[in-house]
Image: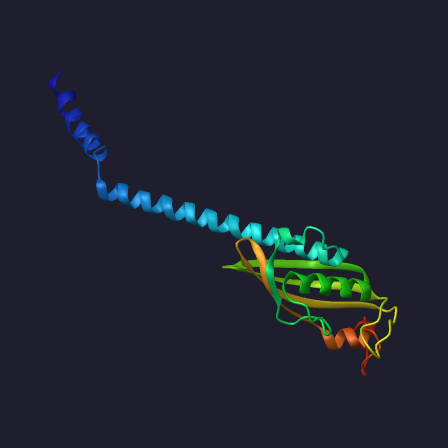
Length: 189
């Protein structure tokens, strides 16, 4: 009868030693939980920036500026404003949207891909529209469609867009509108 007790003693000793308090292990687990919480918060913040960026594009394409203050900072700055726009701050963006929507209608964004990194959202998308308004002196409306790719970088501060950089296939657009010599790349397809 004493033999089974002899086998249980080493097992009990092993189980007791595994259940003991280890401050180093506790510290390591606390650091791991902190890192997971920080990563989760960073991911949530980036998702919020991407949602604000999507709203930014939806408003731009619709030509709407009501409520823009909810997602755009008062001191907004575009590093490549539309020619002729001299206003600053959020008014600059509102003026750019007004001019753009009077120049292009039937605006659509397709193939939108967004990436958030740090305080920026980078968006790559396909912009389709019809040129129904003048693009400035000497560039009357052509009533022709455009189909170009664009890349925008939006910098966020306190959850709002405060800076914008944008690049699009300008030469391709001008060729599609018949305002630049060369073959319309879209006509080949």
